[in-house]
Image 1 (cartoon, rainbow over the protein chains, first blue to last red):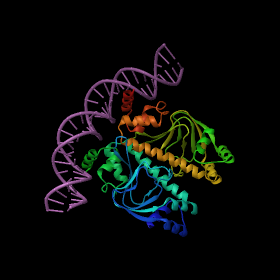
Image 2 (cartoon, each protein chain N blue to C red):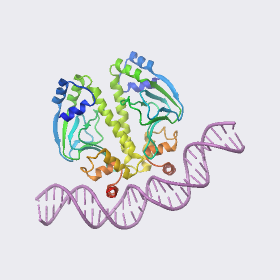
Image 3 (spheres, protein in one colour):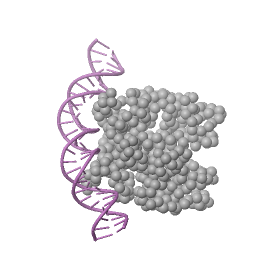
Image 4 (cartoon, rainbow over the protein chains, first blue to last red):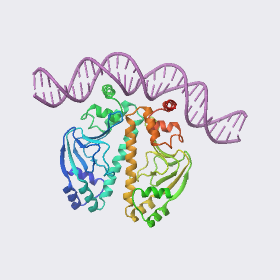
Length: 187
Length: 187
DNA sequence: GAAATCATTTGCCTTATGGCAAAAAGTGTT
DNA sequence: AACACTTTTTGCCATAAGGCAAATGATTTC
């Protein structure tokens, strides 16, 4: 829990009272490996912070292939900041056992109405995360598969050995066997 | 200018007075083809709305190749919502002659302090744009070059015939000659 | 701890895309 | 219209990555 507060405070200041309010709204839950936190077609209105474990966002393309869009590991915030009322097009799945800090939409909105500056903090967090994801993705496009994998390793050092190959391969836009060969060549 | 107001109003309501205030802060400028709106290494603190023309965001990778990260055409808002004080890592360049509506950072912040709900509107706009870009990029990764080009055409129908081939190729992560061949095969 | 299940590696061959350079087409200038 | 200049197309060949299937290795289940 302190992890979460620490994270939040990197984006703005809060007093003790405010921190207590936030803490009181959070519920800690477990999510077992392979379980979905959110499923496509359903509404995703909660907000979750990963205390431990790895989540991924994935979807199916028109050939029915499962594509991993992004990984999130410890100390990352997952939410659907706008489009709250639209069903998700993607799945959010635990790729390892996870411990999550979850806020209901109602509580989250209450924080927004009670704590001055909360919205600004939250917006900064989401904006920053999105920018980063965007940058990663763009950088991947112009490189060959080996370089893409190396870049992935740099960005997600903790993820590489904890998730199935196929997830990483689809994230990088290569086949599982290609990735296996690339891994071998790297060492 | 009405274009801009119309665009803004899609994300929230504003009264006449507020609209007038916004309008009074905007400066219309021209940017000739190939000119940079922002250069890497400099601070980008303004906010620009494209009334006419096409901009692109591009950067150089470690091989010195120029990569187009994104295109923006008419009715799109360009800004650097956070990281206002950090120098840009990218260039923003006019790929056709452009007419832009520009706000200084000072005026933009003033709007934020004067108009209740302005921040919320602006955040929605940026968030939505970033999500969309992210989705495009992710979708591109798992497809072959031809499909990527077709997806590009769907997303940026107005861009395809107005910008150099090399820009599109680097956006798609393929070489110019490959793109040329792909185009031939499509018709 | 053997069987069953699932994930990864590997082999063989095909195919898409890249690299390089020349030709062709397009654009602007005088 | 002729020139220079830029952008796009094309040819030829090299190579990275894909497709498929079998083999190996790892994990779970009874």
